[in-house]
Image (cartoon, rainbow, N blue to C red):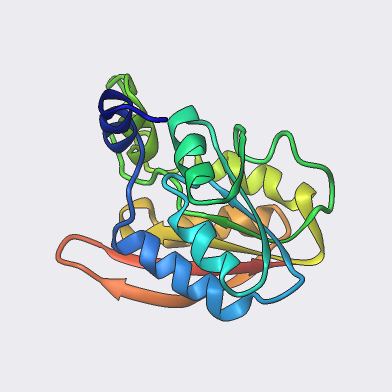
Length: 190
């Protein structure tokens, strides 16, 4: 049983659903269905993975943060502690979903707690996105797709260029504007 102190740590150390989570969940859920195998990288609370699982897809949730893995398991999800896609076998997934840390941050700032790790994406906001794009193709099935949440703060064109360097084509499936940024869910394919 989780005591109150453990619960407080989970709530302050795990990214909880926000507008970006909802946008990714709805875009992916609209495209995935029964029998498809999906991986959510950086699952945080497990909200997106749980929403996609409702479509009948077989979903694995993964996060570097052990508190996030615990919270995802509490939602009834299969959760794996992982750094991006490193522990998964080649060609294992029909879809990979990712709401990465994308907020630009001072390059000298320390990422000293789990929430900083979940939110900040380095100086240009792509410190996690770029290695993800470099490695995700390995775990995709031949007709696999990537659903990647990006912010205008990270440079959508730069993200698409990096995806292209890795053999992906893509398009924005949904966009939503906020006062300081526009969020887009990119669907990428080979």
